[in-house]
Length: 152
Image (tube, rainbow, N blue to C red):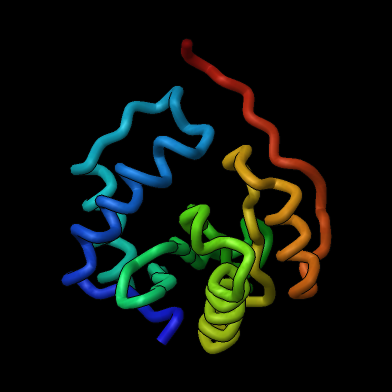
């Protein structure tokens, strides 16, 4: 199964993927990595009745994740979904795993009654290919993700 929902048994593997692959590669160096925070967030998502962590698996190894959250629009009772973080190891990119995770999130959000999935491309890594992938799955460009550092 190329994409599956994470369980509590996956916490260590998720934290390892973030610590040793995602964090070093992504544009998050202004924030200090915390394994404790990573584990707590992943556990919170896994135990949530709404939020979810999807895992991309290749050759029995976890090579990607998508932290999918559900919220209400601030102006409505209706729901939307968003990826808090989406990552696939470089050697697993360019195939079907990223697209499979997005499709899995869409199906999940549809079951939950969400109207749309916001894909937040804000890592600064492989942006053009991520936009291309998202658009190939029907995503529309709504603007830009910008970062304004507050401290440091």
